[in-house]
Image (cartoon, rainbow, N blue to C red; front, side, top):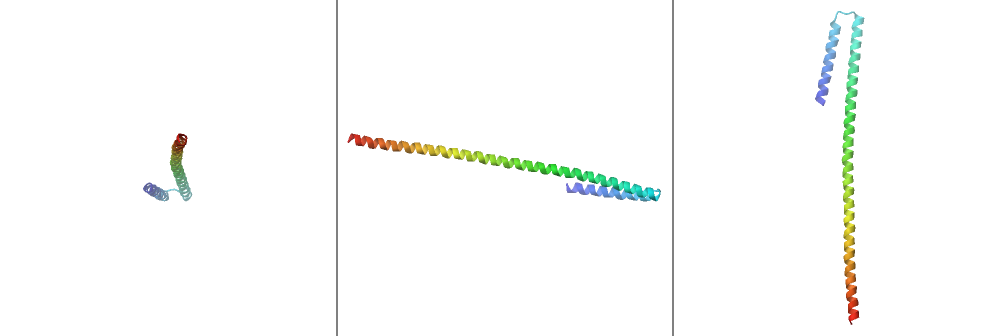
Length: 121
């Protein structure tokens, strides 16, 4: 991108210098020559302004695209982390239920064994 800008700038400077020399060396009257030079530079400034605006617009579009892409990736990461944390919480709850059920079963079994021992004695 830098090389393109340098080439365009060099072409514009070369064109301006060539046109200025051509106008200065032309056999026109002084007033006409000054008007031609003024018109030429006004057109050159306008063309440069339009190119600068186009580049600024391109840069703005590019930065918006980069921002939106980064935002999308970040949201994807956040959503993935949220899903992972939900899965982890669900797994922990299931493990806690299984452990509580297993503990209940052991306590019930021990209570039944103790009751059977007391009844049998």
